[in-house]
Image (cartoon, rainbow, N blue to C red):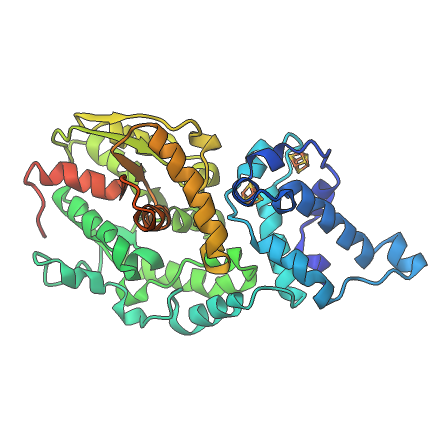
Amino acid sequence: MAQTDYGIVEIMQMDACTGCSFCVDVCPAVLAAGDGRLSGEYRINELRRIMRSRTGFLQKFLGRKAPTREQLKPFSDNVFACTLCGRCQQICPSGIRLKDLWVSLRQDMVHSQAYPKRIDMINENLAESHNVFDEDNEERAEWVEDMPAAPDHGYIKDQADVVYFTGCVSSYYPMVQTIPIALVQILTVAHVDFTLLGEEEWCCGFPLLGAGLRDQARDLIQHNIEAVRAKGARKVIFSCPSCYQMWQEHYPKEFEIYHITQFVNELLASGQLAFNDLSLTVTYHDPCDLGRGTGEYEAPRQVIRSIPGVELVEMAHNRENCLCCGGGGNLEMIDPGLSADIAKIKIDEAMQTGAQVIVTACQQCVRTMTTYAKRNKIPIKIMDITQLIHKAMLDKGRSGSS
Ligand code: SF4
Ligand code: SF4
């Protein structure tokens, strides 16, 4: 029993559901699985039933028992079959903070010992290795070794004005290590005084929230704050929208933080960056954690529009209505089949635009969509916005090392 996993506002909001079903119609998990029980409406009704059985009249006077771990298990499977995309929260006319509620609900399932076993793996990996892949954390910046023109310091300096917080996926997953490789070259060309944290960067803690392990994130947060302080940095920049959202919502407000698209717009405005003509038609996929998560829809579009020759064509669902790629909320790890079915809907919609490339601003979106497109031989390229920027700069012949 874990009633204390919910804040007072969350408990009050549970009763605000009118049963309008708006959240059913927009949920990517419902659309992909054809199962209304994966919706916010179903989940909130079940949660209310469970809460009433744990406390209140039924429990006190009629002796109704709270559900056992075994009875909770099917509901727990439902709770984790969600990408935490936040589309339900965005559309709910009653203003229920549904995504936040799903995170609390996951924590409840963990405290009630009714959760997918893979959650233990995330917890153990982060406690022991400080990254989601259980790799040696000393190898966090090993991707620099793939750069023939890297400086001797390997982009890890003792002191710098800006810290580039790379994030676990881009640090370790080969398919998307091209993102930090592109970004350090962009920063170098723009003469930004920056450093990586290297092995002193630990996971931001975001995967722990999605796993229902909110309390375990504290040590990671404290460590990362101290690591940035030690560099004497004023600013922290992120290519990962989940790290950016985590820092925005759960870290002390000690540093100026930027998603890389916001930072690049400043570099463009100050004349530190300029682009060559690329002649390309692209569509932009709003990552859930950057768009609905932090409200940043315009900065990436502004970057794309700044590249001469690049035409931006929007998908039918864009900005706050953007369809999830299927890769969030640890779903890819828990239910890869459902994750791929959600990716299919996304890719189908992108293909309708006639774009040559899907540009996004998230390594996980790149990973999920590329994997689906490659497996199914779909002729569209998926690119992170850092790679697009780098491509525009490369044509200008200005990349190099410092
Ligand atoms: S959109 Fe909000 S009010 Fe409507 S069914 Fe879903 S949770 Fe309830
Ligand atoms: S967060 Fe996204 S996947 Fe989860 S219930 Fe809401 S709309 Fe569906």
